[in-house]
Length: 183
Image 1 (cartoon, rainbow, N blue to C red):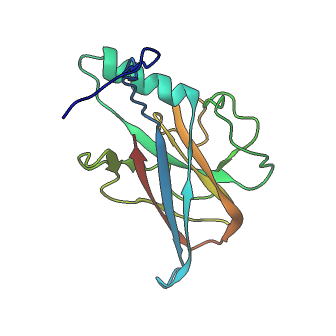
Image 2: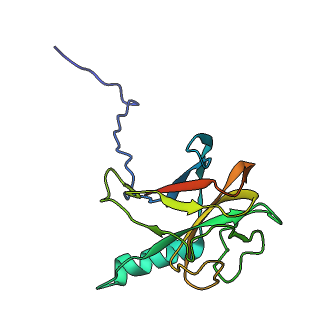
């Protein structure tokens, strides 16, 4: 086999490659909330995505990348429908002008969030945070914070999420809230 090239012929080859590899981790999560009547029947169930606040992301980064003997303590709170205008990435426990805490439950503190081991980039609560409702009202959503003080304004607000529609509760109901965080 003979190959002949003319004087004006040219050949070139090249390789285009990405100069770097990028990886991104996005903090996300989901709340699963169910409301049971005093007789145990299911009134409603709602799953909602949450917003991980800037304060929550910063706290996670500080603890994971710089902490040496950090022990996590997280508590689940409820968001009141009354006066609700929205959750915001800039929200903190001391400043969240778009919502207030729903506190018409008999527990003296916010219930603790106990987590199972992480798997496949997610970490879920091992048991639901449970509330015994002792007044009527409307729950708009849920939040996760590092302080257990009912209606308190200290600690770190990790995340908050709202239902697409308001959810009524009445005295005697039990709310069970589960949470899954993912990266």
